[in-house]
Image 1: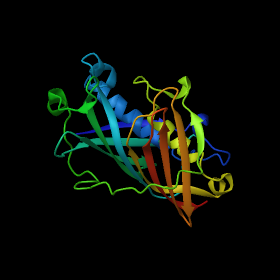
Image 2 (image 1 turned 90 degrees about the vertical axis):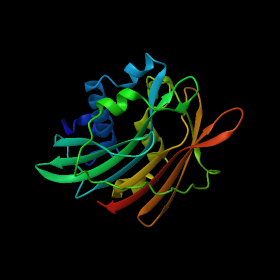
Image 3 (image 1 turned 45 degrees about the vertical axis):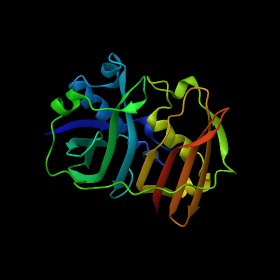
Length: 244
């Protein structure tokens, strides 16, 4: 069984070229997940009544063709993939004018909010229907490398960018990472394939340290969570670009 949702690229998601902001596409995927979990009363809000919640660990996206334009409409199809272990794998197919324009996959896990450890939840296995003929059957996320973070810029996490878990909102990691890239490069390129790894939550009032390494049409970006006690890797992003 697949779940289908429709979206329109509105002004808030548009760059100076009247195209979709780079990585804004992730918002549609996250919104599709949230709406689907709500259908089964399995959102973070519902799980938090039991002192549990969801965390995202991985995203992989491939785009086909040019970026979306202002007021373009898309259809996002979501399906739950069979996996082993505690992680929930979700695949996406995205269509524009009945043509497939992107595929993506994510991994989510239910955690115990007290122990901060992954756990099995009986309703997840019982309620979430598995779909067939998904684009990432048997897919394994490649390992991402880090970058030299010593010359990165720092950004404090404020109340306006945290979510209901009091963590940095998942999409905001992409925004922080994007800000580490040179403006001239961003103006002339757009992402066609990217993979993200969420390693450690960044909390309100933490300082995120961000740096990027770009060579030709590929970038590796890393975000550290800087605290009074230590610095630890929080997020890695690997991106392949195309010229506009």
